[in-house]
Amino acid sequence: MRISIFLILLLIMTSIKSQNNFHDFEVIDIDGNKVSLSQFKGKKVLVVNVASKCGLTPQYENLQKLYEKYGDENFVIIGFPANNFLSQEPGSNDEIKTFCTNEYQVTFPLMAKISVKGKNQSPLYSWLTKVDENGVVDAPVTWNFQKFLIDEDGQWLTYFSPKTDPLSEEIVNWLE
Image (cartoon, rainbow, N blue to C red; front, side, top):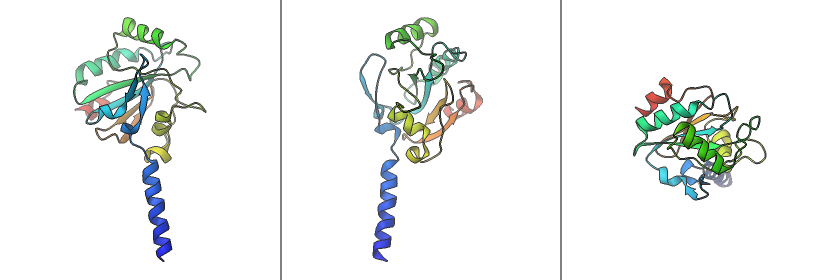
């Protein structure tokens, strides 16, 4: 009986430990600097994989509008360029930054280009997309501009399809 209880407790502790928190990750920004996501504690976070040569690229405009309206001490958008879908983000980090700044006046944080799926998937996106890591649901990235909502405590809340407008009622209601 004692061994059974011990094994159950061990399994529970192991599963809790494997479910990281958003704030546990470090990434590289578009300028090559290390960024600890713990700096976003206390903020709502919208994570989105972006691409500059996609039919959904114009979403940058509404992402920026959302950031300008709500991006203060309580909210941040973090863009992760990715080239996983039909090579729609072929540029270097410098080219991506120039494009986003010149074409859409992006001021929200952009990270270095990563892989959001497949064998080279970044650890953060593995956590975002796999129930055994985020503890909530499997949410594989289906295309550019898929959106993930993270709460102020770094907990995974939900995700939205790539076609969901950043200014959708669901996202705005979450912020308000």
